[in-house]
Length: 139
Image (cartoon, rainbow, N blue to C red; front, side, top):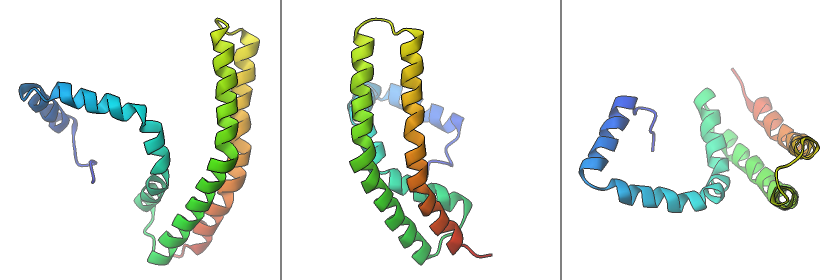
């Protein structure tokens, strides 16, 4: 569903309607429940979002779209098996450090460095996806 056509006034009308119909409390419950699994939901549909984002900039042929989907799926599988365990270990460590009280400057710097250390391997794995897509493009 394409929501790009919605403007602020139209969103305000939807909100006002929700208030008048007493559906806002139900809507808030749905949003809160969905929020619990929003990370899983976003991760599960990230591949679709990437293709959608790419198609905002270029028109893909059917073959290009299939190849991009295959490449993204390979990247996602790698990310699930290699990176998510690293993230989990770091989050456990961060949680333990925060549980001890306000973190020191050194602790914050350490955790910031840990986050930055996640990027090189992701970029290394994502580069072939971009190269495959870019090399398949024509005028």
